[in-house]
Every structure is written in structure tokens, then in C-alpha cells.
Length: 460
Image (cartoon, rainbow, N blue to C red; front, side):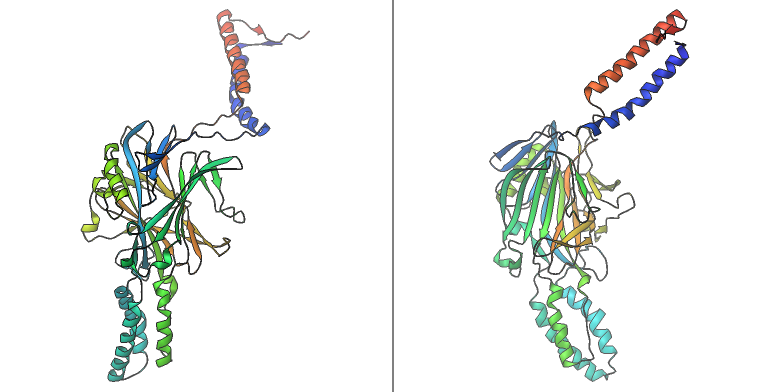
């Protein structure tokens, strides 16, 4: 069979176009264990930190467990160090906005104002009482209300004021997935934060630093709720159990109102409150780590924010400068919008210098509610708000009222890099295909020189 040079070009092109198809099909022939990212661990780096170092990322966190925070940087360039610091949790009200705004904390003054205006006054006005009797009833109710309000806990629990315990990292291997597991647990609150004793041993930051890329499905019965974590990223579960809600404590007060006047049927909806996790995002120079060490060793001090040199962030791809302190200008937190593109997760990047990789924090806009046995009973929507605070960003992850259930939410931190191009075919197959293509190319070159048909396959 004789083939002209045009046919040879066509054959060569066909083989080249077929290469990806052949290669993609090849992995189905044999499933190999995912490549594992090597991790070097030092328990007392600089006598302060646990250090995880990989060829890609270096992650450190307090070895003492005194204060939950994470610092990380690109291993080959430590000029920029990224930080997230867990500031605390805030119980807030959602009568006006569906996300955290510091104008509406669930404290006694704000609760008194909102409940009086939205629930008590309208009911009193509808009773048909005369001005004198209505005023007497109002005074009686508000005096009792003030007594109930005294028993509420403060809306803000600062983590730096609490004692924490670190469960040291241990390696876990399961179903071809390897990660390092460790936990921060809130162990005690100070006496001057009385009323928060219920939080002791009930707030955890459960961490997994992955050696291999994996897709997590927290509940196999709900496979649509899943997320992928790459090797070298840290996934942490923020877990809250047995939270005592201020709005629940007011129910006894509304029950009492009904005893003195049955027509005053006042019901305060519990879903009008929520819980916000306050996280500060900052970045520093490597040489300033010693300042952060002073904060770790003296927990009440707040130093990270003063040495931070973070200039901006990109929030769902929108540039946002943080070097202007909006908290001092009478401005308030703005909601993080979940557009179609970011419906499955929200992502916040530190704006990086040209010489290094960008750090990020991302989270899925849903959280799990668990019962006493750890079973999933529901999924709830997570909202978020943020504000520039001058060289750092305040982020508030907002969770709706979850009653007596346990809340579990799973953010991720890491470095934002392009994924490694996967090997589409075994090396031997690629060698054969590439060799065949080279052989055809040489044949074409010979044909070009000789300018005549060549007999590739001779049929006798």
C-alpha cells in the first residue's frame, strides 16, 4: 500500500489527536494510591510552635495551645506570612439584618429595645386599655423585664481570655487518604466572664492537615454535601455544643406576661438570633514572628493586628482594601454575597506580593447540625460579613440559631496554586505513543526530501 505525504500528515495528526483519548482511558486499567505530600514535623520550633513543613507550604500553630491561630507561608519564600486568628464568638440579633452587624449584639440593652418596640408596645396598644391603665401595665412589665435581662450572659466571648488545650497531632490513614489530626479545645473561661461556664469543653477547633488530596463527604447519606481538600491544605471544623441562648432565657419572661394578662400573647421567635465566629485575617513579615510569639505566650495581649502589613484582600474575586480602618468611620460590616459562581463555596484571598503564592481562607455556605450521638439532623445556611480594620480584615462566619444541637462548620486554609497537571497515561504508553509520532514525523521529513510516495506497508 502506497501513501502520499498528505496521507502521512493526516495519519500523524490522527495519532496526535487520539493521544489524549487513549491516555485518559488508561488510568481505568489500574487505580494507584494518590501521591502523598511529605511532611516534616517539629514539636517545639523556636520553643513556641508546632511546625509542619512540606515542599509547598509551612504551617505553624502554638504548641502550648494557649491561643488558637495559624500562620503559614510558601516554603520557598517566607517573605509574606499569612495569619488567621480566632478572636471569639458573638451572639447577635437578626431582627434587622440576616448577618452579623455589631449594631445588634444580643445584649440586654439591645434586646430590651427591640423586644419592647417590636413586641410589647404593639400588644399593649391593641388591648383597648385607657392611657393610665396601659402605662401602669407597661411599668409592671418593664420592671420585670429588667430583672430577667440581668441574668443574660454577655454577647461576646473573647477566646484570648479563655484557657485552651491542644490535643497533639497524630497521623491518620484511611482509604488511601493521609492527614494529621489535632484539636484546640476551650477548657475554661475567666471569672470576669461569668455566665459562659457552659462553653467549657463545648467549643472545639478540630483540625486536619492533609498529605493527600481528598473529597470529604461528612454524611454518606447526603453525598451532595461535600468538599475537596488538596494536599497541603488545613481543614478545620468549628464545633459548638450546648450553647445557652439569651433569647431562649427570655421565654420565661414572656410566659410570665401571659399570667398577668392572658391577652398579651407575646412570642419572641428564636430564629431571630445567631452565633458569629470572629476571625481576623492578617499578614506579617517573617522577621515579625517574634512579636506574634509574645502574644502566644501572653494570651490577653493582641499584637498580630499591630504588626500586620496586609493591604488588601480579594473576596470572591472582588478587590477590597483593608488598610483603611472602616470600624473607626461609623461604617458597619457588609455581607459577603454568594453569587452563582460562589454558590458552593466562598473564598477570601490575601492580596499577595509578586514573589510569593497567595494565601486563602474558604468555606462552604452550609453547616451540619448534630444530635447527641453525632448523627446529622439538618443542614443550615451559613452567611458571612466582613469589614476592613486597618492592615487586617475582620471576618464573621454567621450561623443561625441551632437550639440544643451541635453545630459543625468546615473552613479551609492554604496557598492558592494551579493544580499539578495529572499524569494522563502510564509512562510506558506515553513513550510508545510519542515514539510512534516521532517515527512518523521522520518519515514525513524523508518524503519531503525525496518528494515521492513511500511504501510504509507492503502487501504481497
